[in-house]
Image 1 (cartoon, helix red, strand yellow):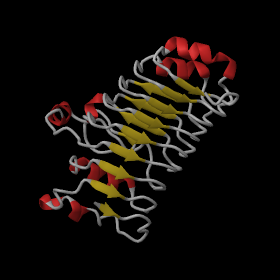
Image 2 (cartoon, rainbow, N blue to C red; image 1 turned 180 degrees about the vertical axis):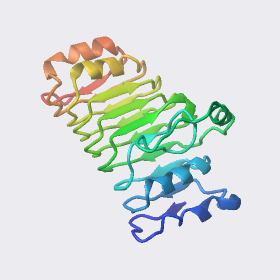
Image 3 (tube, rainbow, N blue to C red; image 1 turned 30 degrees about the horizontal axis):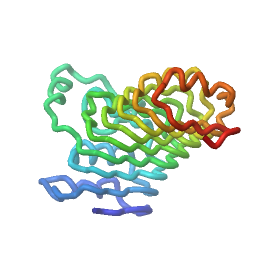
Image 4 (spheres, rainbow, N blue to C red; image 1 turned 30 degrees about the vertical axis):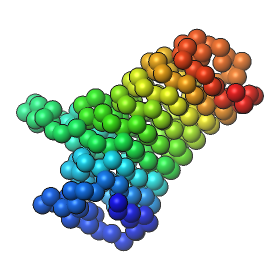
Length: 228
């Protein structure tokens, strides 16, 4: 376990000793919350340290779009991503599966899009918390083991795509998201039991029956006019 919360004077190269030459092979839990490291430094660390199980990047102002794209590498900025040759993409398929189970990016003000496709090999990711990321507009996830997803207070959220067959809890409190978008997203989640849509201005509390119709597994829906 290594906690580096609020270490605001770390140089961007400070993380390199954590993974170069096979260092810290037993490291499982890393907390970089409220730091000022640049995105590329964090991306490189995550690309190399596939053995990490718990990562916290809460309040990281330099974190931008989390794009764990088709290359299977680290988180890549959408603005800085480039086209990769076929050989490199093909090579990434042989990379080891990530052991990541828990990812926290709470209150990251500059994240606008989160993309975790199957090629990212996040087969163990079970919990993702992106709450209070006020500029987050798009979330596109294909995570087989994901069971908990918190997008509460992501007031800019407009696009939600979920390929998460084991998702059981989804929190969308205070999100400015269309009702139809939520219906489409949860229709792909056959194990969803808890849905929180309180204080979502575009979701009518009178239409909870429609949500239950598209997702029969739902047991609890929290809306503004009802506690259950």
